[in-house]
Every structure is written in structure tokens, then in C-alpha cells.
Amino acid sequence: MIITLGFYKRKPGLTLEQFQTHWRDVHGPLIAGIPGVEKYLKRYVQHHMVPSQGWPGVGPLDYDGFSESWFPSLDARKELHAMPYFQNEMIEDERQFLDMDATRVLMFDNQVVQIGKDYAGDWMEGRL
Image (cartoon, rainbow, N blue to C red; front, side, top):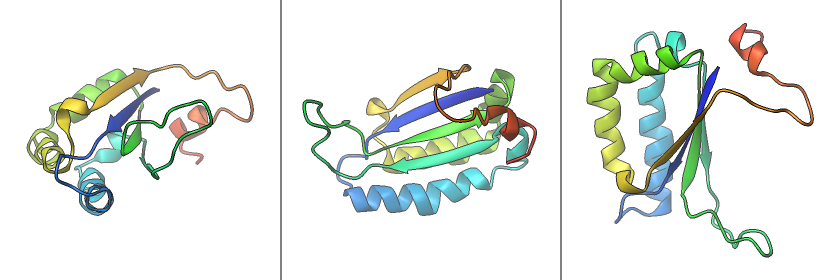
């Protein structure tokens, strides 16, 4: 299981509401519309940030949102990103609402669950 976390800032000139609406109502459906998406992407979650002052003694996260994308393998992620639909539709749409220079992506393949059940295996087996 490969999980990527993408951290996003809105494109200059967009309000937070415009950013969130586009991400949720335009970009999300584009991802869901990728032909055969379930072969490549097992889970996609958008986390829309709420403006706050952060925790006492800790500054706020300087992003407007972040996403989780769960892939069955690194090869599946590479195949999805190489698809013409992804290259033509997804990348072009990202340029419409994201500050691409500020986008950051983390990728990992190992979780250490300290409390609760590790659901990664259940996701992979289709039990959730």
C-alpha cells in the first residue's frame, strides 16, 4: 500500500470558498471519473482546512487543504499518473485552482498504528 499526502494552497486570487468549492465539486468528480480508477486508486480523501490560530504554542498549518490518496502499489500510482486522462484533465484542472509552486507531496508505504485497528489490509481486501 502506497499512501500519498498532498498539501495544497489556493491559486492567488481565489478565496478559500472558491478553492474549496472547485476542489470538492470539480476536481473530486474528475478523479472519480478516471476510467478504471478503482484499479489504481483505492481511497481518495480531501481534507478542507478551517482557518484557525493553531494550537497554543504551535503555529497554524500554512495550507488550505490536504489529500490522502491510497494506491495498491507504486506501479499503480505511476500507471495512473501516466494515463492521458490524468495528464490532460487532472493536471490542467489543478492549474486552475492550486498554487502549483506551493504544492507538496509526501509518499509513504508504512504506517505504525499506535491506537486502534490498522485498516490498510481491510481496504486492500475490499472489506471496507
